[in-house]
Length: 86
Image (tube, rainbow, N blue to C red; front, side, top):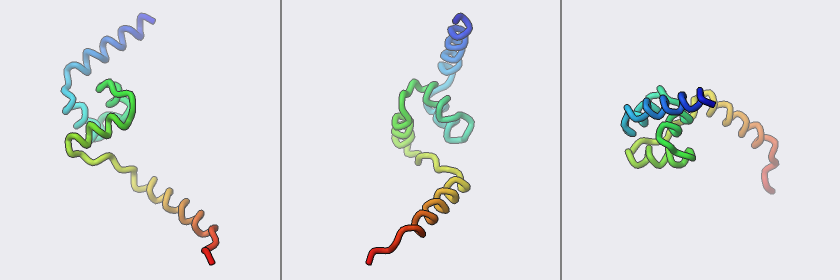
């Protein structure tokens, strides 16, 4: 339990050294994960982070190209199974 308190106090101290803009810039650059960014900014939901990005005129992150290609392939496979309306 003491270790967790030490970790939390050190994390809070490290977060205090960076401004909100620096933390968001690190997220946009890919240096911080979504979870770390939300934790450092004390955000409870991803929508709060998306709103913070929008407030700064930053587009939400896009999924990797391979993920999009997989999703499109899955969608097309399902679409092929659907009979067209008469």
